[in-house]
Length: 249
Image (tube, rainbow, N blue to C red; front, side, top):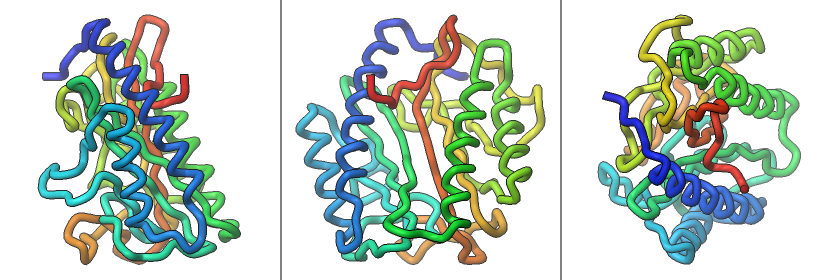
């Protein structure tokens, strides 16, 4: 059963999503060569508490941090550590924010200094895949329409889309129904309806789509060690179409 949110619930999620976008912008400013990923996590947690929320990820299925920081071949959920960010890296920040009883979730991938032309093209394609997926998130379409659009665009660009990880519904729980794959068939899956809130999060790679668990026990990385990129927004379906909640209002 996919939850339908009330107007009041959506307004709380909109407020929380806006705050999360503000926090993410602050984190982006701190990403530079020489910073340790654990420093980014500490900043994220302090900002979450400053704005009156709680970290969605910390303690979730045993995850030990507020922020996921995935670098290069790491796709998602890598645990912050003393690892130093270096010029030429691409780094994904994934953060959840629990506010007034509801979760918001977003992710961005950043280029650190000068990165390869392939890496820049991967970042552009992943961001555009998310944008195209969001355009399909409207009443009357199906979740398969989102999935198929992301897959077709990704493969047209010569990249692979990760198949073993997916987007999700969100609200009072961090992960609600439905699962939103980044590949699939048009007109398949549940129908999209007004009041649904969910996260679309394409994960693209330069190589194959196969993944493996990272040594930290939480993260996932590409099996062939190719670069990976991840973008994510929380959104709501309205009469006027899909609205992104994790954006600066």
